[in-house]
View (cartoon, rainbow, N blue to C red):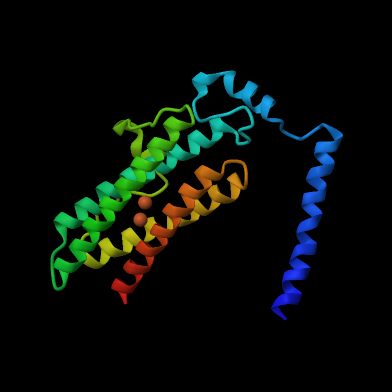
Length: 198
Ligand SMILES: [Fe+2]
Ligand SMILES: [Fe+2]
């Protein structure tokens, strides 16, 4: 059985190899090394953003800045909840708030770094932070309220990140991977908070 499978795999592999050979024979490869070298020399000031970059850079930077604002608002809301947690089991919940706050700050740093790589500027203006953020800064009057508000914010972040990932598609795989990484952590956060509410 394994031998048969190997054979069929080899057969399948011969297709693309032949295609490549054809490409070579025609003398017109899609991207020749000399063309790539030539393009890389043009606009070196663009750094990591090369001529074949397929995403709408301006729009993407704006979206990443909205996510950055969202993360920073979440850092502060979780921080506030960490300091204000009172009541039964509040100590362990407070530690959860602090851990989430630190992870949101990590997300903010990674987003800011990517914005700069794409030739943009991270918007850290505190005056407009809550306007640009998708999630809200709601303090909550008791521990249960705090957990609920944090869960709502996580669910907002999850939907926003999923929408961005869908929008990016295959146009910018690095940003897409970054957002997928962050999305996975937000889903963990939401799950942890949901179990605290049970
Ligand atoms: Fe986050
Ligand atoms: Fe989160």
